Image (cartoon, rainbow, N blue to C red; front, side, top):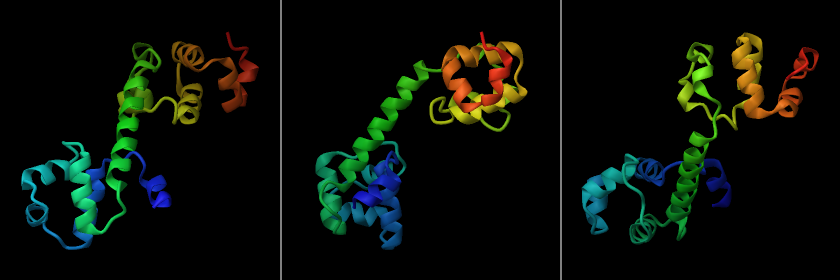
Length: 158
């Protein structure tokens, strides 16, 4: 189970539940009624619109023969991921100084600035203007930039 959780860590437990129900060819509505739950509840969870709670988790795990606590562990990891994303919203460069066109292949507001820092630094230093480079240097720091993109050592970073 630990190996499985490491792979799907951060995914909403409803997505895993939906996959499990499809794999077993169980209809969501009938499954919900079989565990004395409203079909709308299971539907909302499988769409990721509602979180898994402890009592429902126990019912689902018992009905499907899954290890106790599996869905709650997934819920906690999902909550952690959401909290980190919320913190990262506050921890990003000044986007008014960076042209969205520089990241034409993605939405600039959806970039994970920490996980994708190698790609961001590389792209800005290969295609960005001076203002964008300065903002990335301010955000990540000279040392991080030099470690990731050694060509910047020649530029005498400010």
